[in-house]
Image (cartoon, rainbow, N blue to C red; front, side, top):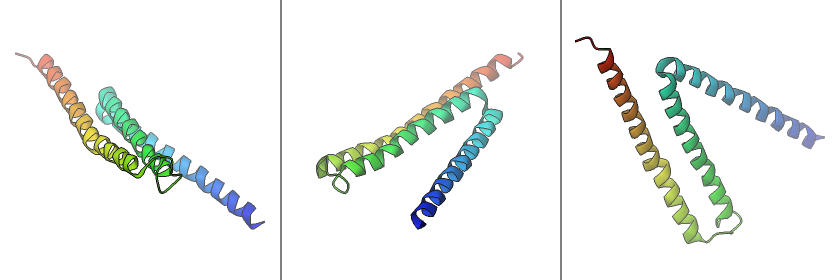
Length: 117
C-alpha cells in the first residue's frame, strides 16, 4: 500500500515538475522573442539545446563509468569528462560569443541601412 502511494506521489511530482519547467521555458521564449526577435530566439534555442545535450551526457558517462556499470575504464571515463568539460564550458562560451557578435553585426548593418545621410 505504501509503495503504491509513494509511486503515485512520485508520478505526480514528476508531472508537476514537467509542467513547471515547460511553463518556465515558454515564458523565457516569449520574453526572448519579444525583446530580441527571430535571431536572438534562434541563438537562445541553439545554446539551450547544445548545453542540454552535453548535460545529459554527464550522467550517461557516470552510469557507464567505474561508479556505475564499469563498462568503460577509469582513464576513458576521465578523458570523456575532460572533453565534456571543454565542450560545455569553452565550446558554449565560443558559441555564445560568436552568436552575440553575429547579432551585433546584423544590428549594425541594419542601423547603417536606416541611417539618413
